[in-house]
Image (tube, rainbow, N blue to C red):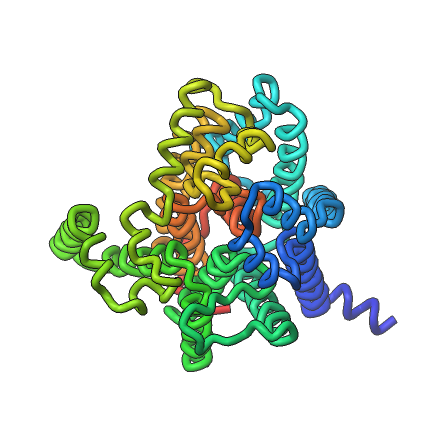
Length: 441
């Protein structure tokens, strides 16, 4: 009798909701660990980097990427999302506007690409996983509040980083003091860099407005920054720094904003004019000590040659593209790898990959979605003072910047899942009421 009364009381309901949220967060964390992670990732990374042929590269992928478990986890996310959609709260939906319509259009355009896909089987299979992730994101949006998403961005990376350090210690590959060490853990170092960037942005956002335990938030932020550096992921690291600079500029008055923007533009121009010459002569620490690759800055680590080759493929289907995730089939992947002479799993540019898959319509829609999402997140933050929206803006801005040199923001990954949840929340949830700044979760 007492337990029933407790369950029906406000405190009991809050406790039940809190337990449900933690179950949800742990479920998503475990599901994406199955989808993306492998305890043998350090070994796989080393073998991939030393592969001498396309066949050897494909054999390595087949050894370390069991597809069945990933598919099961993806289906579980979608089914869990459907269950949560039926349990969602009523009356908090946002009126459908241009942003929400654009988001629905992009999803529909990706699905519609199956009609003209070059490899319909590949497109259908990857569309299925995309659909499951969308359902999971929609369900999570209905079940979680903004602060819960920040918890998620703290919990999952901490677990993944701890598991990664444990995996490397067990395999005897964890030597952070060595010059060319790259922390991989249970992911490729670049993917681990994205994971650490999510952790850093969440911890930094909490520290920004924390009223209590600020020292602990500083410690977490510094840990995330150090681990991010150890991955030697230049794109993730540079994108995080750019996000911090951008956010700093937003807090300045109009004249300082103009001065900061002008300075950033001048630095970009200077980099493209003489940056490669300067970088070749800088200490190796600035280039993350990655095996004497300072010369590779001239070609953005081989990306310029890759984009030139992919541009020729784009000319063959310039209007509609090859279908959602349909460009990278076995034959074209093999041709690209043989031409570039390094393992190339994607275009290393989210916008270029979208252009290849969905044509100019899909690419323009993606750009508009990111821009409008960032704008709305900042608006909600300024309106409510809720630090969760500050984190939303930070993560979407990171996706937009990281997408210039990596394709992770549009791949079926943890980062894209975070972005989906945030975009759905911003597009279909009511605007927050004006209130005092919320403390860190």
